[in-house]
Length: 293
Image 1 (spheres, rainbow, N blue to C red):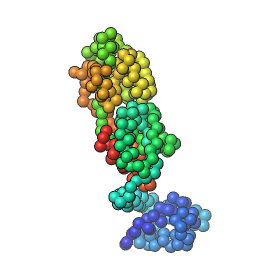
Image 2: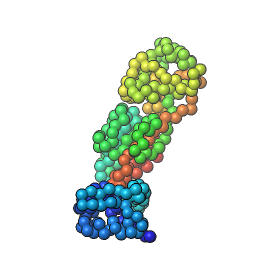
Image 3: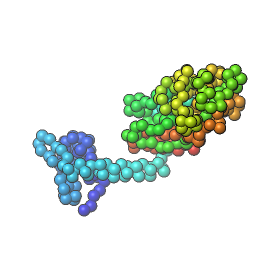
Image 4: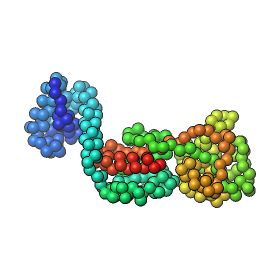
């Protein structure tokens, strides 16, 4: 038995198109040529993959078993071909990137100038959403997301995780004092998120465990809004290190309850749909920003 990628692509084309004639049009072959190619593949495998009549066509049990394996093989071949092309071609075209406002402002924007100089052929479109967006609906090529991944249908690349700090402005501490235990937070202004609730879980040890579900007295949908409120002395916030690192260095914010802090790191991922035409741009973007983030 000798299989080749053309035979596998023909089989997938027939399944995806739903008929021999439709597959022939998509693949640029004649219907009789598609039929002969499919028959040769079945002969090589020694099984019938598709039951075909004049009115309908459906996968056999063997065909159902073979289909995902064929898709995997073709996808691996396409990825290998794409990698080879990437070695000799400069990426070009539009790349739509989405991230929350804090991630966009503190992780992406500082490096966009250097990225444009290195990859002038890539036209970036940057959008910011503090809620998780549907990539297809919003025509997004790659999204940077904080926290655990929920959608297993997306491809993901793990980026550098970030600690989260509980902090407030020196002005707030001077007026209200610094909480020393989780129990002390009940007497303070607590800044939190409207959603998801997981962002209101603070990495603080206490009698009930190694994390604390904060109950906000003021909730926002944006980490950047929360940062600005904390800078203005409105309350205590828990935000990612990359958001407040420069504020802490400059003394605009001070860390609180450090003795109760755990070593939890908030994960960050870049998520995208597998698309061969876009993969070169996505790979260049992720390699570039991962090295800097």
